[in-house]
Image (tube, rainbow, N blue to C red; front, side, top):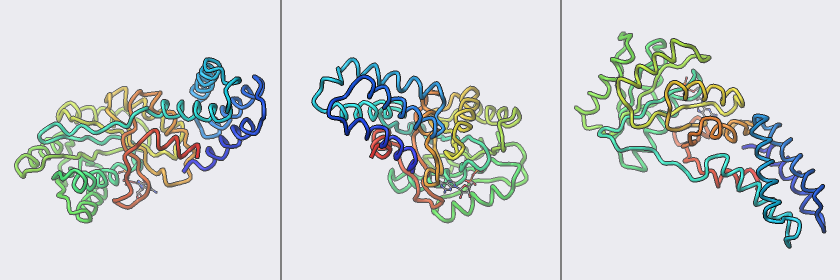
Length: 295
Ligand code: GDP
């Protein structure tokens, strides 16, 4: 995960760590390298620029040049800033409703169905909840079948209504089904498209309005880099979602989405997907991620 970024940041900071005495020029050069590493990881230009500007300001404020171990202090400043950028503290999930309704949103292929299953499995095993999965993709029968397969695998009930072409009605019926059958969490999987379009946005907005979820999650493929950030912005404008799910972090992702998304939509990353299996889900901890990036 983020191997390239880790390597480049390590290299950037390594130069500084090796110096007996450090000058303002060294610090400036290091920060330039840090910025370059962030840009290479597909972090948006402005975010990368602001990032290094803030680290520089802190370095000057703490008189980095006169401390005993300036290299280490710089590493700490970069790590703190990375943590802050990715969200500071870990954010939980709101399970207050009865039942708690969780709405999934995102493009087709982002990993919504897979993540719906992972989350149901996680809530069932870790939080002893009784979830219900609801299939609201009325365009692709295969998507409904996929959710049923996932449900069977993790032994979680799935509500669907093949042939019904009204996703709002299915979502509402799903919530009613949950109440009747003692499910205390409802996870609603919705239809995505290959790119943001008005029909999809209107549909998800209508579902959102009708069922008033406690938690609306935006699922995004971390491999898509800056596109992930742009898509997040479009969905957030319409849904004002509560959190982001970053999937496919097990792949050769450069890290840009993980680093940039929070500062663009000001919503926390709540979980990450790290594989195709149902167990490949992790709570997102910004501190741990920054530690991982900076080794
Ligand atoms: P949806 O169209 O948004 O419902 O996306 P799917 O859940 O069908 O996922 C699309 C593809 O991505 C499937 O082949 C999944 O197995 C795969 N996938 C989903 N999440 C992950 C993940 O965290 N890591 C990896 N490697 N693959 C994933």
